[in-house]
Length: 423
Image 1: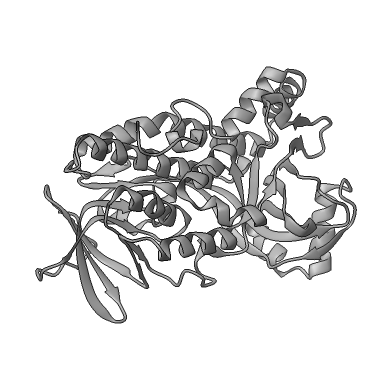
Image 2: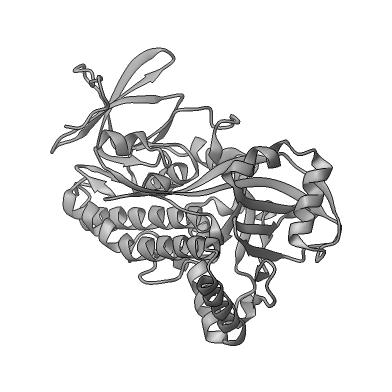
């Protein structure tokens, strides 16, 4: 049995569900969309109002969706509501501040029209919530604060507070998708490896004078990446990693001062920067669960692996978690409609499948973040050699692009544009 301190689950009869997802953010809500068509009864618990400023999944951030993520969302029925507000990534330019040269990646090298698309997190959130509202078998339980979790060989029992009252439910499978500081992970007694990068991401929208033409830019600096992503109506999404001790100063800068400072960092490729949107700040840390499964339970998304935003891989990695878990459960139910979806062997098959992709993506983002923050001359030589090699050798660029698009190792059917239900 695992519980949060000083709490217990009520002995009263509990509502029964097949799957309880704790965390109604983008990953948790996407999983609910994936599982509902399988005939599973899903309870989706979220602790804060889904459109509140305190809900980090639905703020003004821009999401860079890889090619595989776009296909996953198409298979889940979410993409049709996003298309009109999505901007194709038609080129990627990578540089290092105060060093010559750049790596230019074009989708035509892979026979593609684009690398993926950029959408606003709040637009994504609204599309997912609207889809969920029409799905039978899914109940969104909002303002539900989990107070206790008990796992047994037969089921998981969850206690939560809602509207000042105690409630409870029982499920065959518990999924923790409640972020880097996961309550579920704590309740299950799963430890996490942590690394503070000493950086904070300043996130906002900006409008440059010149058209971005679908080009995404990533410039590596000693305090982390300075990334500019193409967006609708001529806007760009800015993710600017600064030293954490300087974050407050950047957040408090007058708008024109901030715009000029950011423009000076980026350069004049898009002309003067004319307009600034709301700024938000996010401390950057690596948080990785030591294991991602427990008794009738598993972690996915940031609850399992919150990573550095370099390369914009965090949400894409979480969506691949969703696609694989949905496929594992779909195949089990196709073979036996009475299959135990919380069985240890089934959850272990999910974990085994995900391990190489998670390890590779986490290692890549963490390695880049540390390498470009390293001031030593040897690290500088390594960075320069790597940049030059990618600039001059097309196969290396293709490998980098394929990794960024989510096509490495065993790829789930949804990411290939195939039906979730196996033939």
